Length: 169
Length: 142
Image 1 (tube, each protein chain N blue to C red):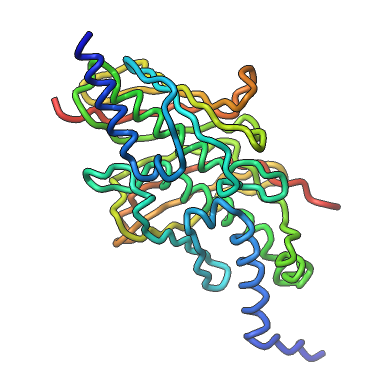
Image 2: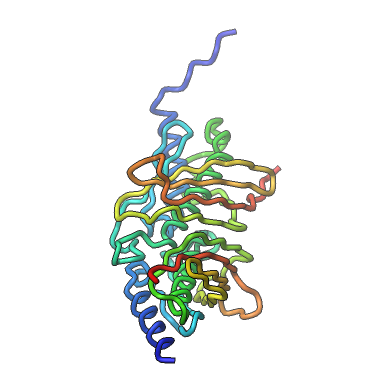
């Protein structure tokens, strides 16, 4: 039996990007901080564009610790949600049109979040990636690292536990 | 006594000059001798769950971090500025939409190099905290 022809690349990209955009742009606080996500296949990199309003210590100057924490938490929640939705996006079970229409899937809820501040955040763009270490039916554990100029010199890392949204079926 | 007042004044001035604290609209309701109380008004821009209008945990985290830092700076034995080493926040429940978040932080122990802080976040319900935090902060300049 012949293998099914792969979908055209634009169709695949369009569906993935629409789903991601709906997920990220649906949350006002993510927009307020100016966080965007860069996607390569299923790998996401969160990008926090620098803004004067993100400063926490004007003397140094350095990013606000709360901004760093929020950036890491957003990266963890979107990363975790993305990982669990990926199969549904790929199979077409999850309709991006529905997402754009405002029917967002329920996001995981943060139970606790612990940030480790390794060095001060410089007044420039920051990047972060989440690693889902465990994702069960009810709970998940996610680790996140954020860096600026050098990927191998993280300026902050965090671990958080999350309550997964109830799934139908 | 005067030393405590100076610390409080310095901590207040420094914290009120923080661009991100100003941008979010954080204000002090109390600050003295290692104890800080702040609040953050509800704002639709801080929503984390568009379906319910519940504030994002990140905004609560930012307020707790700022409040803890101010508590450290206002401690009579703290010589100067501070930075967060580590901060853990436990989210006990969703904050009620429309209500301001109030935090109280206490710097309960200070060594020559580390300050230990705990904090609580509340909405209008005094009996059921929204979140609690424990953190360690640097003690700078001696």
